[in-house]
Length: 400
Image 1: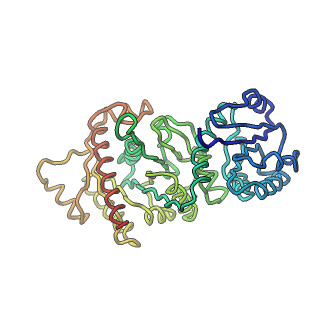
Image 2: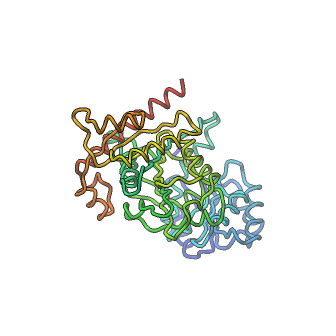
């Protein structure tokens, strides 16, 4: 490896320190020095040991004023090219993480179960950090594309669409060494009835509830701490397990969340509730596509029209794409379809066929539709490809 990395680990975990000491060269090109203790206990020794290191990892407590003061001293003394990472236990709150960020910590990771787990996580940080040290020219700011699913009514299948569209967007493209994979985040903002987590058989999470109760504006570190990994490659922020009011979030919090996610992901898929709340404004303002899901029953069409008018009130060119769910596209223009498109003053962009057997199987198994197959899985796959193509064309048009 042409860019060797030196790392200092300061931890109160004697087992972790012992495991790191036992393998002085745990990774190709990575040298590790491990010290037992806390940052505040080591005082000036920590700065001496950190001098010349590329990566400094400290197990610390964001509620301890002495630790925070020691972090500020350390981050002010090390090289600007060095990265300081904190290890925090599971009881750390969002405000604790914010305190660590404000003291100069770049990233906050959970305390690992083993040295191997820590090194696996740091391996993922290393290449990006080394590139920052070696690259002198400015790097273009990444801007991921936001796709929000808006159901015209409850029970129309909005979450099923959000989950499976996100899974298809995250699927590999190409084969072998030429395969690429988009970075996709899936966010469940149906605060009271969200089921994204259960559909993907993920662990329960109350990160959004904590965010709402503490009133903090999330940054990239908080989001990385809160999001869950799915086997498909998705990173998921589930709806809260505990009850929260539908308007528990503030628009500023949602705006900060979306801006942070756009810097890290290629696509951000947001599952919205069918009720309209104030914090949805920044979603609509930033969305590259709003997928309005409905059926052609008269009440559903009327509600869809009201939603289009509401969403377009402050943004005349709001990118609404109308999707009819659980109905096959008519071979010939039916009267029902013509009446619906006339009422909406726009064409139906896509049709999703009824496929209750496979939809139920996917939900019961906690797996994406692609894993169980069927007509609906095929239709969502084609929709994902079409959406990618249209979003890419729109982004290219903006750059010219």
